Image 1 (cartoon, rainbow, N blue to C red):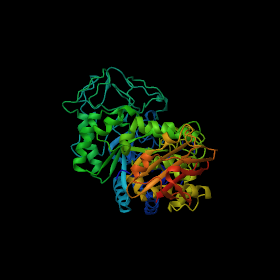
Image 2 (cartoon, rainbow, N blue to C red):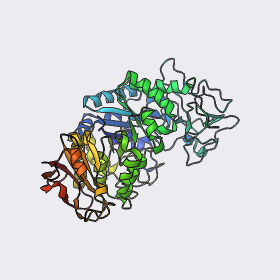
Image 3 (tube, helix red, strand yellow):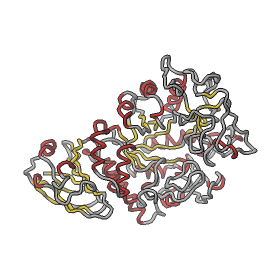
Image 4 (spheres, rainbow, N blue to C red):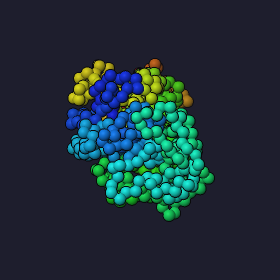
Amino acid sequence: MDKLIIYQIFTRLFGNQKTTNIHNGTYAENGAGKFNDINEAALQSIRQFGVSHVWFTGIVEHATQTDYSAFGIKPDDPAVVKGKAGSPYAVKDYYDVDPDLAVDVPNRMAEFEALVHRTHAHGLKVIIDFVPNHVARQYGSDARPTGVVDLGEKDDTSVHFSPNNNFYYLPGETFVSPEAGRSSPNRTPIHEYPAKVTGSGSITAQPDINDWYETVKLNYGFNVFDGSRQFDPIPDTWHKMLDILLFWSAKGIDGFRCDMAHMVPVAFWHWAIGRVKRQYPRLIFIAEIYDPSLYRSFIFEGGFDYLYDKVGLYDSLRRLMEGHGSCYELTRVWQQESGDFAQHMLRFLETHDEQRIASRFFANDPWAAVPAMTLAATMHTGPTLLYFGQEVGVRAEGSEGFSGDDGRTTIFDYWGLPEWQGWLNGGRYDGAGLTDDQRNLRAFYQRLNHLVNGSDAIQNGYFYDLQYVNDNGQSAGYDAHQIYSYLRFTDRQKLLIVCNFSQHQTYETTIAIPEAAFDAMGLNSSRTLRLSDIFLTDIQFEAIGRRGIPLELPPRSVRVLEIKL
């Protein structure tokens, strides 16, 4: 079944009960959530919410300004760390977990393993990040298994490129951080000579302040200097990264969300995913990808189970939620971009990279998500994702430190989420401190999850777009820029789903269903149909199929009508 419901937890923030929230505050001042904070109550609430998979974000050890040298962890130069906590995508040791997340730092891996076991015990599956394109500037594994050669340990640094090197080099040049003045007198300043190519692919020893200057790019046999590639024999980095995937797979995790997957050659993914799945056939791979021209190759050649539907459905839904989009874009997405492999597309409205729906930078109202999230979850059979806090309207207001006032929940800083505390409620995860509006919002998301889980048509059914028989005045009162209607059906269940994206307009219209759709559903259009809303209202009525389905659609409303004879 592809209809997964994934719940993304930013682990450092999820269980943090401190809301001191000092700008650019330290770990001691602002605190951090732990593996152990994701307790039985938390996991039970997530399971009851209707979730199938939990994506624990920021698990692997990354560069940080917090000093853990007392535990044998080499400190990082602040000049190459973004924020006091650091970016979870500047991995410092692929074979270790973030010490911030442990109650007992020396036993941090055991605490993570206990979380995996605890999560499985609640009937949930575990996804973690795999960050294959780049590592922290001061990468060095002190937890790697005996016999494992570290990244770059045997590189020939006298050449720009070699397929046997793990990094790319700029011989004769020394790296200069744009934040060089931030080096701490208590830390050994970074001395990178020769300079390495930056994680974004920037070929310069002096990357810009807006670049990924805290990271360096890994070499998969693609020559960034001239565009050539050397994949035979298999480059050394391929073997090292496969070993890392197998290391985490052996921990019992159920999937990898692969960061910036499109920046790594598809040939590597084909080689590596195939080998991982020989040992762990049920393990899933999700690609963060932003180039629609690569979608097909990353699924059918690379072997990915699911791809981000960001440049496509997310962007189209966002424009509609903000009041300047058109539902014609939704038809374009399935017709021209991903319709014939929609079961592989992961749909979402929030992640750690995106702005919060409730923020003033996006919709400024969490309820704007109602039609968009319903459509994202029900349009096709592929998976959906919710980001923790989305369901209670987290706004992400203000500047946390390195992360500015941009409507995103920080991934760089130590922080506590005020709107989240009402659900967290001192570690009870019972929502006792939520406002009535937050409770109602969360109830919407929970009902949507349960709708998806309980509907044969949504999980397994065919999709039929109804725009073409209702637009251009064919159906009175039907605004095809603001209304989107479609069918989802199997032999066992037939659904008509209608979404009104307008912020202010109520529409009275009749939804036409073509004869071909009735034939596909095995229904006689001349018969009287019984329709009942199985989602947000208790509307029940009858209509003769060929005469259309009369509906009143308030602003930002949805109807999920089950059709029966």
